[in-house]
Image 1 (cartoon, rainbow, N blue to C red):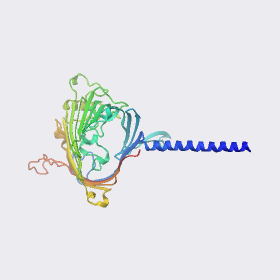
Image 2: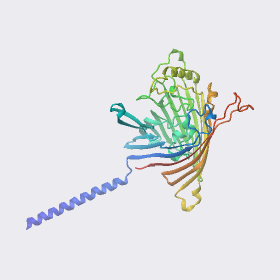
Image 3: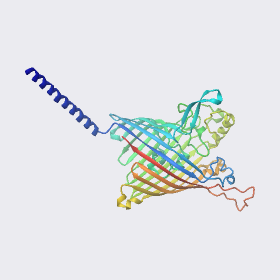
Image 4: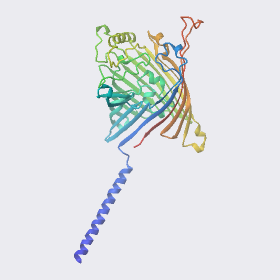
Length: 451
């Protein structure tokens, strides 16, 4: 019996020890769960429905009188759906990444074609793009006053590149002017030196240059950061800078700029005829955000100068003649303006701020005006008068919770009327005015960190 009692006592003690050990492990887990996670998961997305009350023909600006009575067109779209992943390795080392699916990404499938003797064939099923928009490693020094970041990084030139998440603008789509004249969201492989000191945030970047073969009359340098290859050509280098000030409560003012050569940043050699042509591109942008007194007001002005525009336009035209019959040719070979301009202001007031029962929700009533011109000057300016556009927008943003915004807007894009000096409309010299472009859009968006 003594042996039995001893065995029972030992088993009982083992049970207590096991329970105590389990309790200790649970306490450790609970303690860890109170600590901030080193892993960050977040993202944003937009789902949109639009009705355009104007022609969708790509020729609508060449013969506007032929398209003024076209029927309206509707569309559904997923402009951007992004997944962000980040991790804190400790000792000031962090990483960040962003995978972006534009317009729903792209889809391919392998199918057996009955019409082609049962051959397997890859089919492209839908449009869209998938991009690694960010992938970088960052080292922090001096408590965040100095950081060094390397990898695929955002180029924060202009408001829309530095602040491109859907809760950072009122319109259903991203601000139209900046998204037209510059890459948006602009991201490239590069090196960044940045930090924040008191009320100042600064950033300076070293990047590969843009490619002038991808510049266009209607979009200026918008496509210049893309590459048809599995790498980005870096024959030329460029620099970008940005400074933001937060000294006044509720107000942020930012100044940003870019400079770099864009010609010869390709795998082709243009020849001695173009010696001395650099395609120097300079951009300067000023923007601000005021968030105070239940108002949000945002504004920007962007100005860009492109040197050697005529020489590069001529080069592009020669290459267009030589390469236009090649399948899969990725370049545009378009005329290019020597200057581009965009400016905008938008303001919204939270009407729910005056209703105590709705203080946890927000309803922004907003208006926006913007102007942009991708051919503000240059030899070919008269050929592309339709690139000078104006746009007014009025609408609502409803935020039932902080992370979700439901948007609705009426947009009216319009153009300057040509000066016909009293000419009759049937005169061969009479210039037809461009048709104005109204539209209605609604969208639902989210922005947030899940972990």
